[in-house]
Length: 188
Image (cartoon, rainbow, N blue to C red):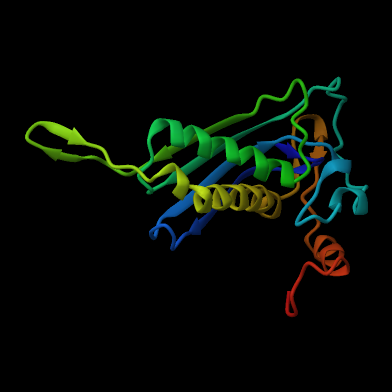
């Protein structure tokens, strides 16, 4: 798994909402996408500031990568609402610099752990109003972006078949760049 030329993989993030009710949105990504020059974290063009440490491997012939994004929530949502929620994951992906090239195999899925009331052999489903979904949409976008960044920060440099190496995101250099752009608070 390679994300913008750095070692990628699995990342997670979540948000706990208070409105419309206390619900949680969690995101899991399997990240393998992107070009170095496009990598962006919190609006910082990180890929342009760290142009070295490119993967030491054969040319992939321009093949695009892919990402799988799973969005889970305990909010009671209907299938069409979950579809809308899963589409918001693409916005979080775009915040990291992805442009979803022609050959990329991106997959977005959303599910709810809410369950129906069962009474007299009948299920009674309750769902949030469509007008109440904006906080869930925001949480999905933010958690998707963070899950991708977490995948990058959690990954370690790896050497595989025939000595091909994919470097991890250099943490110290990344934090220096983020600090230079004013994206870190004191103490970080």
